[in-house]
Length: 405
Image (cartoon, rainbow, N blue to C red):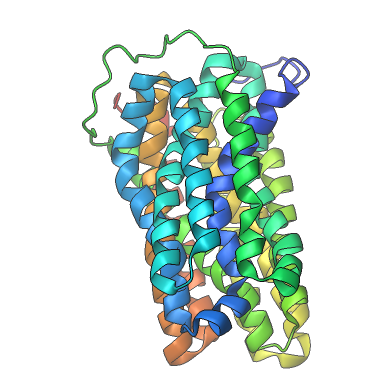
């Protein structure tokens, strides 16, 4: 990644395209934040344990992690236009099924369907950026499109509990379907971009990552595990253990969304001007572990509990989510990692695997040992992410050592 002296601006990028990119990231990931924001209602209405609540988002991310081994190759072969259409169609089908799900099993199946869209989101959006966005502008655009994930958290925290209180959690999920269909129409109307990023020779079989990319996958896995535990259970924890109301507890998740949006845009812009962003990832991962420590302390100091849970959640949003965005920028900017879609999918695979594995384990710990054990798990995985980032920094620039996928 080379340093650019050009002024970074998104003025030349069509605003409609940026919105589509953000929503392509936001809508598939909304499942996670919806489960977190609606956790108190789901636990009561479905009569499920904390462990079972953690299983819900895990079903979608397990599908996404497995399909990510192939989704990037598929996007490289069929092109971002067709793959983007499929993404929004799957989101519409998934949330329609959730709207009519009347039990735990059907809801889990509908969420699992959304895993297809999750597996496509990074390969599709990264490929669109590589095809249509000038290199000197990509840092900011990647940050904006990745902030769509936290936009989903903001929307879930601000809107879903209020709608659910009036009309039930089914109605709170129903609004996603028309939004997805509008995005589908907008994607269909996008002009086809030249397919000059190695798609002609792209196969469907997954290829093994190189040494540095393998460590990047480990970093992504740890970041995903920590983020999934926080976003799935922080609202339920604030409500059940700290005595905060449902609506106020969901606002904590909205705070996470705001800090994530700002941090993704800020740190990817910074990373776009750095020759080696791996040192930045190390610092972000370490700060995420410190922020998770505030969540643990919130249960040890009852008088300061609400303030600490706010500080910890916003801190995680300001650090861990930005490290993931920086990884996506590395994948986009260096062709030596292979075709953009495939390399993005492999990078996403580790992230989704963390999202799949963490919530059930975090819920089990909460059921058996209390939420203090859950937050200790989060601290541990962020420290492991810091260790992975340390190894990557010692290996040197990741894209200089990773062979083409």
